[in-house]
Image 1 (tube, rainbow, N blue to C red):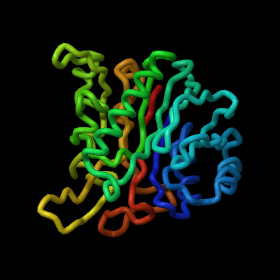
Image 2: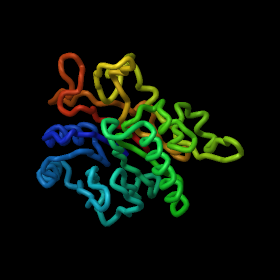
Image 3: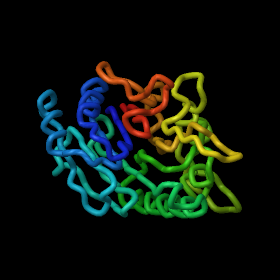
Image 4: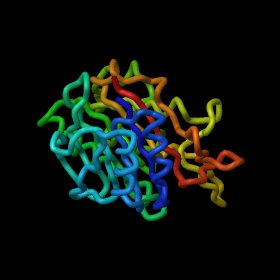
Amino acid sequence: MNYLFWNTDGKKINDYVCDLIIELSCDIVALAEYKGDIAELESKIKMVNNDFYHIPKIGCQRIDILTKYDPTKIHHLHETSNYTMKRIPHESLGFHSVVFVHLRSKLYMSDDALLEEARLLKADIDEAEKKCDDKTVVVGDFNMNPFEKGMIGATAMHSIPSRKISSRVTRTVNRRKYSMFYNPMWNLLGDIDEPPGSYFYNKSSHVNYFWNMFDQVIIRPSLLNNFIPESTAIIKKTANFSLVNDEGYPSVSDHLPIYFEIR
């Protein structure tokens, strides 16, 4: 199955999204900060793909989800204003849990506050997995880089850059066990393969990363054999549109979409 996430920054992007869905054969699409006409988008997609639906929003209004699966087949798990958990069919897994995330911006929330949000999110995921299983994918705009405490800390998302280490499933710290995620986005940091991140921000500060990897997917070890590592990508163009300007910076939204596959 093919997954796409994009923080659209409130822009009119229906034509771009339609292109991405068709070109990448997307099965699940999540849009953060979407302000467009969702009915129009659904109509555009259905002109080329009859089986695509908008999933009704319940507690989380910050994320719109579209999928080829009929909404009646999707089970709603835990929701907050910052994330929504869904139990979604999968062709080889039967069902899997997908957590769609849009945590608050660093403009309005401190690093310490984001760390606490990450801890709450992880606790909710652990609780949901007790009722289902651990076939869990978390994707979205975390407003944190992979190396920040909220993403790497054992009590937070605990998302590790190594498949080998994360395959151990848990890690013990001071006699407490903490479940792990694998974070493939570490592989995309830097400019060997452009772009160097999913979000560009230039600020007048002594510490300036310029490029950030706020948009990420993290995966439970139980799904590592199904995950296609080389599929993970930051998308900067479609056949018809460029999503970056001449300097390579995001131009349609302030974020670039991310894409991955789980078979």
